[in-house]
Length: 466
Ligand code: SF4
Image 1 (cartoon, rainbow, N blue to C red):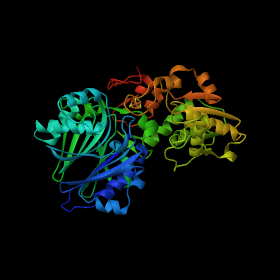
Image 2 (cartoon, protein in one colour; image 1 turned 60 degrees about the horizontal axis):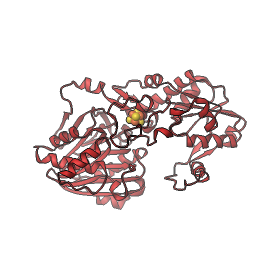
Image 3 (cartoon, rainbow, N blue to C red; image 1 turned 30 degrees about the horizontal axis):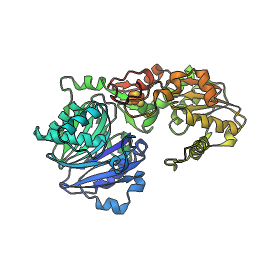
Image 4 (cartoon, rainbow, N blue to C red; image 1 turned 30 degrees about the vertical axis):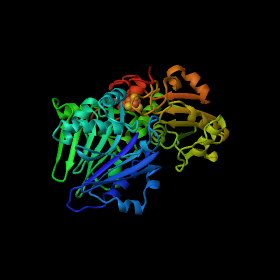
């Protein structure tokens, strides 16, 4: 996953767009924690700074002051397992027939091997395993046979099969692309002379920019100094149909997105609170205190507690400064890594029957440690409630990286899972209730990790579901 941000200043003056890009991508840090980068366009001259680490560690005033220009793209990224070293850093830059192009992408290309083989047979040289290099290579080839960069992008997205949001920066444009399923979010914002594209609306709020709209599934939006023009993957259907047929990832609402974002018309926070209330109705719990697995379980726990009329309080604290934990070889080291991340407020939980609300149960390893910590701290009972249905299918689209055999809900009964994680009881919200919590949503949702309906197709090669 990646957090993407782009901005273009449409006044004639070159401005410090890098600072806007910095604050934008800083607000999207939750979408990718391993590396960060910003590329700027200074009247056709491109500069980039990117390195492993969080956004705040990657940039300081000196670096930002060197990144002068009127247009920028930025990425906060977690690399895929196939992407290594400096190859995994974004934005990716090329010089092609379309001129200088920089790309920030959040993508899973399902026919990656086929496309890579095809291009290699045609003489293309690849220096990395990244989607962004593949997309730019296709773009470069397509630019030879098309008149505009937008046409070259259209030809490129016709060739790739998968899910993605992309932000291209050319020498005179900022161009956003959302895949034909609209699975990854992308929004348009505006402030003064500046247009912005962002993975989530929370970045626009942070910059005090106006949220204009969600980019439609299959839309290529091209923003230049003079105008904004959209073209569509399928121009035969109306805008209304296109949006209605979209399939945004339901895990954005469950876990991925920041609670203060609104995606495709539905507030992440509201949907989580409503899911918690629905969970309480479906799986009430006789307990003394409702707590959350912070932070993604917070809103659902609040909704749950309000609905059953039992106090909601803090029982677990999350250390926000834990990055990657490397010491995970033995069980003891894995436990230590979870202890570094979560600590129990002993005085809040001791002697109480605790109901802990989490966003989801994927492999269950962290949950098992947390329940154990709560018991060690004196909790009399620990009941687990989950604000999403049983995760039975690994995501082919890059969100959860598990294998099918690692998902307990796929092979075990609730009783067996309770025994494995040490819970007194377990309850999942139903998929119908989760979908009903997405008030105001304009489009459909992908819920394949719960129901196995992979609308965008499955990966060829190493599909975790096969
Ligand atoms: Fe999201 Fe699940 Fe669909 Fe993956 S399979 S895109 S996690 S809803």
